[in-house]
Amino acid sequence: MGHLLEKLFSESIINNLVIPNRIIMAPMTRSLSPNSIPGRDVAKYYKKRVEGGVGLVITEGTTVDSPNASNDKNVPCFYGDAVTKGWKNVVAEVHDSGGLIFPQLWHQGTMRKAEETWNPDVPSYGPSGLSSPGKAIGDPMTRVEIEETINAFVKGIVLSREAGFDGVELHGAHGYLLDQFFWLGTNIRKDEWGGVSLEERTRFATEIIKRARKEVGKDYPIIIRFSQWKQQDFDHKMAENPDSLKLFLDTFVDAGIDAFHCSQRRFWEHEFEFSELNLAGWVRKLSNKPSITVGSVGLDLEFVETFQGNKGSNSNTDLTNLLERLDKNEFDFVAVGRALISNPDWCNLIKNKKYDKIKGFFPKDLEELN
Image 1 (cartoon, rainbow, N blue to C red):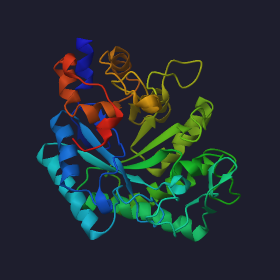
Image 2 (tube, rainbow, N blue to C red):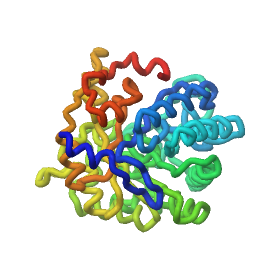
Image 3 (cartoon, rainbow, N blue to C red):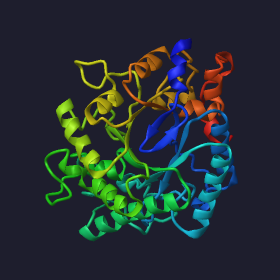
């Protein structure tokens, strides 16, 4: 595995941003920002991962300026003076350690926890008010609400640049609002914000990118995370074949996206039956844009399995499969999640082949920021 590590620790680019290695800290919700303000402990948390060798940090999901984007006052938001000050401190800590950082902008849509008491009077909404096929949770978005929410995302992208972030990621995965527009199971609109084809249903997300480009220009990195699977349906494939996937990707390339963060539950699983390529591999091939793979990197169990019976995931330091794919340019970057929670210095431990020092991940590791 030794010679394969050289590629993992070589630099690459997104837009014009040079990233010193191929390892990205994946966005992971921590819900440890009281009153939605990221504190100094949050800044130190990301700083430690940079010092531990991560090439790029993507923050946990941070909610845009929409009253029903979330219902958890411990999830950081991305608007307001106090919050902006908190995020600027996070950026400063990361930059002082020589690192790079993107925020992940998020709206939960009908996946918002409406039963909680923080903001229960604000109704949840989605493109058709559905959280899954046939299950009405909130209201269908009006045209005015669609415009307001697009503008909230654009405002967040502009603020990310003003706050000193090196780029920005849109959360378009896992059944949240942007993904609810993509998914025919949750978007049954008959107007221009819906559509029979997958590419038609990208309009909400691509409109955000197009409008943001007018504000931040072409050189500010904008990426999107998306997934075939949904929290509501792990087996779902919204793009059933490469042709459909290409049409989906083309709408984002035309809008001005710089890279795709391709969420899988297990990175080693092939996306379509007739090829060994995973989702990130197909995306790179079809879009000619950088792709990021993710999914149980460095662990022996995927996320849901980890929490069944609180058994946790053991460390898996045999990265041969991952590194061989990277070496063949199947994808450009590797996002690491839970392994970095339990091992802030995971990257340096891998680089220096100190595999015996790497710990597994257990649910209790989420209880505090370390």
